[in-house]
Image 1 (cartoon, rainbow, N blue to C red):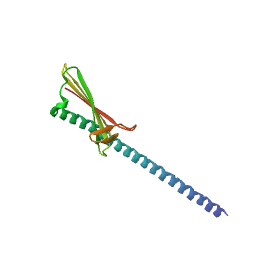
Image 2: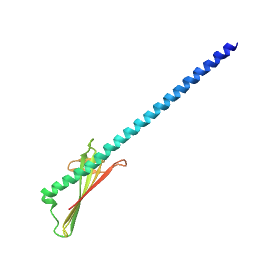
Image 3: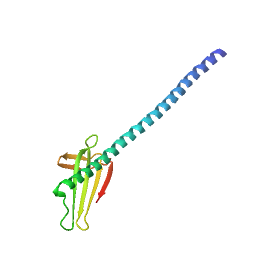
Image 4: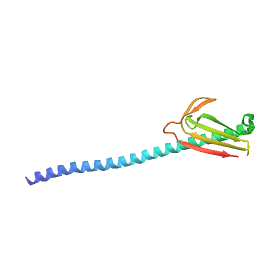
Length: 146
């Protein structure tokens, strides 16, 4: 009779041991999954930041090139001129866009380009791009004065 009680106690111990090992393995798996999820978010955020920055850089380079080679960008006769240009279809998934605010002042002569690049928000088609960033857009801004 004593041996039967010991066997019953051992059966309970095996069940307790199996549940404990399962709980430990589940905790380790959840910890690894949490780390992996954070790494995926970090890499996506880095890509979005790069897309926004390079969109702004593309806008500045394009506007500087036009300013150097096109008569449409000539200095104003008096006062100041200001306009906005938009370029879309940029970035790693062609959803990036940039809005470039160009301001030219006659006296003293100065030119300012402010480019706001977004990782998404591109719409329309060339040359009539729209740049309407979404709520989850990443924005990077570059400014050039000369």
